[in-house]
Image (cartoon, rainbow, N blue to C red; front, side):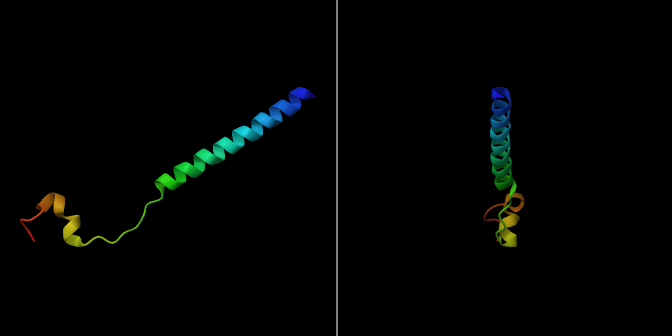
Length: 52
C-alpha cells in the first residue's frame, strides 16, 4: 500500500511541475502587441537620422 501512495504523490508532483512549466512557457511565448510608427520599424534598414 505504501508504494501506491508514494507513486500517486509522485505523479501529482509531476503533474504540478508540468503545469507550472507549461504556464511559464506560455507566458514567454505570449507576444505583447504595441503600436510602433512605421518609420521606427524601418530604422534598422534606413538609419536613425538620414531618412526622417
